[in-house]
Amino acid sequence: MTSVSEMPVSATAAPALAMYGGTFDPIHFGHLRSAIEVGEVLGVKTTKLLPSFIPPHRSKPETETEHRLQMLNLAVQNIKSLEVDTRELDRAGTSYTIDTLKTFRDDLGVHAPLYLVIGLDAYLLLHEWHEWQKLTDLAHLVVIERPGYENQEPQKTVKQWVENKLAEKPCDLKRCAAGFVCRIKLRQMDISATMIREALRENLSVDCLLPEAVIKYIKQNQLYQYS
Ligand code: ATP
Image 1 (cartoon, rainbow, N blue to C red):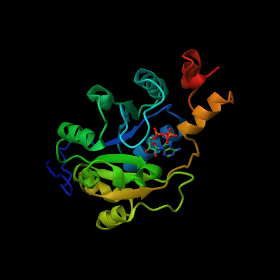
Image 2 (cartoon, rainbow, N blue to C red; image 1 turned 45 degrees about the vertical axis):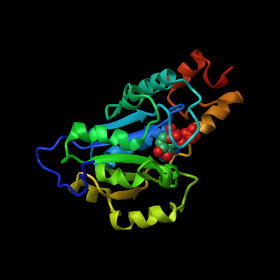
Image 3 (cartoon, helix red, strand yellow; image 1 turned 180 degrees about the vertical axis):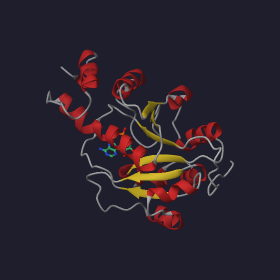
Image 4 (spheres, rainbow, N blue to C red; image 1 turned 135 degrees about the vertical axis):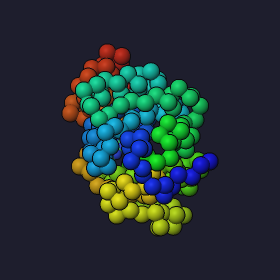
């Protein structure tokens, strides 16, 4: 694998890109706000939302791929800075992030900053990810604080690995194409897809937790045992 960490950013490089993966089962305002804000903080024009086909570190999504994708498309339809990217669905099989990063790197070349955005809950399990130590060879890792996980730290091996990669401010990442890790705090929204699935099962309102168009889609297709 080509290591692009610490590669200087060149004036002729492709525009910087942020990628934000998840099961999005369903997509909600916690995802959308953090994806919009992280793009602004990093100064990227586009943040790609990547629905995973088979997530390696958690149970299979409850909802069929096609529905998760439709809900994502509805959610981003009027948000200029967000785009849905289906490469993990197209590839099928287990959606290892390292493989996805390789394809982005092939598209971008070695001189453009690439940001892998994950929530703190995902970061706490980083040591379980396939080839996790190689992630920063290809991208910067941007960790978003998440309500309910305050002051939590990753496993010791991850903490040691991160020590000489930590960037204090997001703007410090812009100098290189990859290689650094930065923790950032955005507007915190205590919303999870689990909470939404549970509310729907209990026939409780999910208004204001996710876009109306997505709620309508859930009702029309009777997802999450909506009755
Ligand atoms: P579930 O409850 O089913 O585990 P989730 O709401 O955590 O789902 P995922 O699709 O698993 O959503 O998450 C995708 C990414 O979004 C992860 O990196 C996760 O940490 C992040 N994320 C999810 N919800 C929030 C939130 N409210 N604030 C910040 N990051 C979030």
